[in-house]
Figure (cartoon, rainbow, N blue to C red):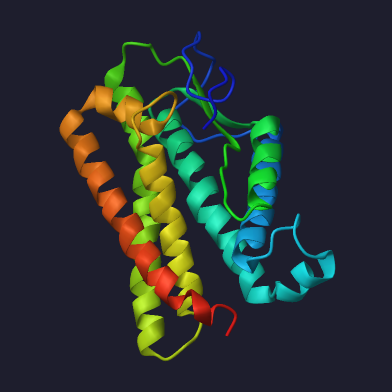
Amino acid sequence: MTSGPNYYYTWAPARPTTTRVTTSRTELLHIGIAYAVLTFDLIIILSGAGLLFGNTAHFFSLVSVPLILTAAAAALTGFVCHELAHKVVAQRHGFWAEFRMSPFGLVFSIFTATFGFLFAAPGATVVSGMSVVDRDNWGRTSLAGPVSNLCFFALFYVTAIATFLAHSPYFVYLLFLAYINGWFAAFNLIPVGPLDGAKVLRWRTPIWVAAIVVAAAATILAFLAYASASPFLGA
C-alpha cells in the first residue's frame, strides 16, 4: 500500500451500498492493470535476469511457461486475493470499497524488479463510510488480507511437500508461491503508516501479535525451503 491519501483506507461520507459484493468497470480496469504489471515484475524476479543487465534475448531465453504461470499465480493469490479479501469484508459490513491502483507504485515496482528485488506498492482498497473511530471494522477489514495470504501459504506449502514426495521438479514453484504469500502477509502486518498492521494493532494487540508471528514464521520457513530448492527452478 502507498502513503498517498488516494490509495489506502480513508474515512469519507458513506456512498450508497448494500452488503452485497459489487464492483465497477473502474475497479476492474485498475486491478487488471495492477495484476498485469505485478505479474511482469515477478517474471523478471523468477527469471533471475534483470532487464537492465545483459541482453533482452538472454532474458526471454530464461522465461518458460511454468515460470509465467507461477508469476501469474503469485500475483493472483498474493496481491489480487489479498485486496479482494479487504473489499469483501468491508462490503459485507455495508461499506463502499473498491481497489484503486497507484501509477507511481506500479512504475516503481518495475524499476526495482529490474535490479533483482521487488518493492511493490500497486495500490490499495479504498473504503468509504467507515468512521475513523470504528476500530472493529477497520481491524477486521485490515486483517482479512493477510489472513487470505496465510491460507494460500498453507495450501501451497503442503502441496509443495506432496509434490516433492512425488518426485516432481515443480515443487519449487509451489514453494515460491508459499513464500510470496507469506511475505505479503508479513509485510502488510508491519504496524506503520497505511499498512494493515497499524489498523490491526489499534484494534486488538494480541491478534496482531499472533498474526505477525505466524506470518513471519511462514515467510522464513518458505524462504529457507525455496532458497534450498531454487537451483532446481525450471528443471
